[in-house]
Length: 196
Image (tube, rainbow, N blue to C red; front, side, top):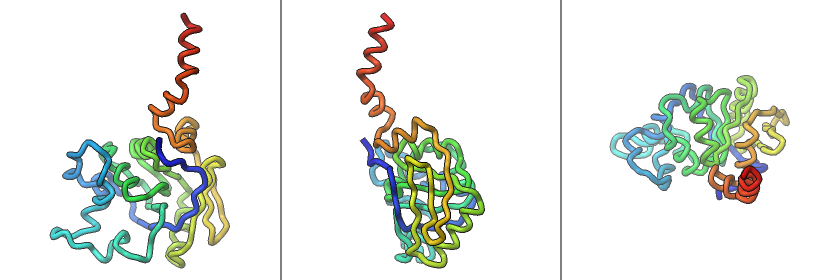
């Protein structure tokens, strides 16, 4: 069971860069591990730290100004190779939601499979969100997954977003694919009995 996503209101971490690929999210040298633990420590590793391992004070994750459960990213987030570790790193750092105007499909699916909700908004709405965060780092977004809406609270403007109904059900109920099958075990057994 994963943590359920229903209604989340949070401050945001802005990353207004386009075409952020999975190697930038989690560099390839960290992919040897086979469990999900510890990946959040290396999220955006080469941007967060210099070659000696010192924090880069200019990178947003190293600044006390921005915090929260929502990462707001530029267009085409999660492009590149299909590593699931990128979603592990984002979840491991503590992000529950990533907002962008476009996600690579494989990254989008990997995120939902690992308890992270990718929310696609219009380019205009994304620009407005970035402007609100820049004007006030304490600005919040509210994401209501059951209603499939995202609201920029400083302006009151909302947009709807699309999500696969099965993945939505899993995220709302905190289930992964195995949990979902186990939750429906009785229905599956009844169906198989009836088929015989």
